[in-house]
Length: 138
Image: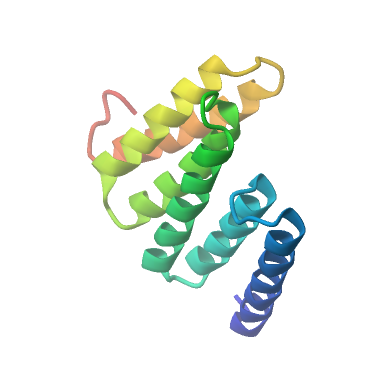
């Protein structure tokens, strides 16, 4: 991967997050959380899994504040991405717990469009189970 392009994208996302925070007059907004998710994704691509994990957790915390009282399918993608980073760090039990929560959130949300998201979460669960050596479940 072109590290320069990833660094440039990361710089642009930091700038975008600053603008979003000013527009919304808070960091606790879904668009800010989504920008942080994008930043975490770039960190993951760069191999900086520790920083990626921290950013995914930050985005998830914001989403939990934004959707407090009705945490639903909207936090599932952040849970999925956090689980992927945890799996890459061989923290399989933690990854599985995030995926189970994502499944539960998707089950409680609207059915329209959730099938594809659920399939992706279940596929990631199979990767985790296979990594754990639990082939009967995977």
